[in-house]
Image (tube, rainbow, N blue to C red; front, side, top):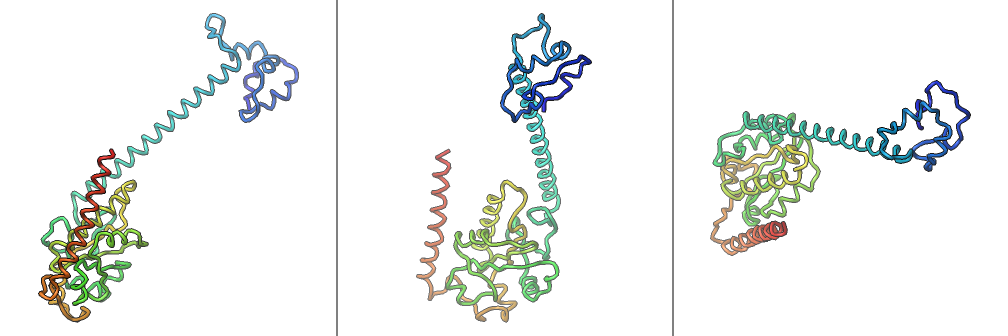
Length: 289
C-alpha cells in the first residue's frame, strides 16, 4: 500500500477516493490526476522538486523512477550477496586444499583421515594397502569404521576366471568403471583396485574413476562419490601368495599365459578402442569451443 506518510503533513484533506486509498503495486495503475486531487500542498512539495530543480517529470514518471532506483538497489544488494557467498566458497576450498597439501593422510574430500593403514607403493599419488590389510577388511575387522567396501579387479576376464579374490568385481573397461558413479553411495564406503601386479591397469582405472568423480562433482568441490579409494600393493599375485584360501578358485592365471595369447590380443584391442574413442570425442568437444 502506498504509505500514508505522503499525506501526514498536518494539513486537512477530504476523504481519499477508493481508487487511491487502496493503491498497491499489484493494483491497476492510478491516474496521477486522481492522486494529485487529494494531496496537500506540503505533500506535493515533499514529493516534487521545486521549479528551479524541476526535471520535467510528472507524477507517474516519478513513481516509475523510484521503482527503477529501488530495483537497481535490490539488484546491487543481490550481487553483493552472491559475491560474498562466492568469496566464502573460495575461502572454504582454499582451506581444504591447504589441509590436503599439509597432510596427505586425509581422504580426497578432506572430511576425515584414511580408515585403513597405508604403505608406500609404486605409485606415490595413490594410497596403497597390503594383502594382509585387505584380508582384515574381508574378515570384518574394520566393520566398525567402514560401512561397505568394493574390490575392483581390473584384469582381463580369462585372468579373473582363473582365480580372483572372493567378492571381487571384474571391471577391465572404462565404461564399466563409470557404472560405479551411477550406483548409490554410502558414507565411509571404500574401494580397493588391483590388477595382476597393481602396476598399470589397476592404477589407471583408479585414476580414471577419480578423474570422472571430480568431473561429476565439479560444482561441489571437494565433494566426491568415492573419496576413499585404495590400491592393493603387489596386486592379485601378491594376495594369492599370501591369502590363497580367500581366492576363488584357488589358483592364479597370469596375463601372459601361453594358452590365452588370443584372449590377450582381443581384450587389449577392446580396452584400447574405448580409450581411442574417448580421446576422439574429447578432441571434437575441444574443437567446438
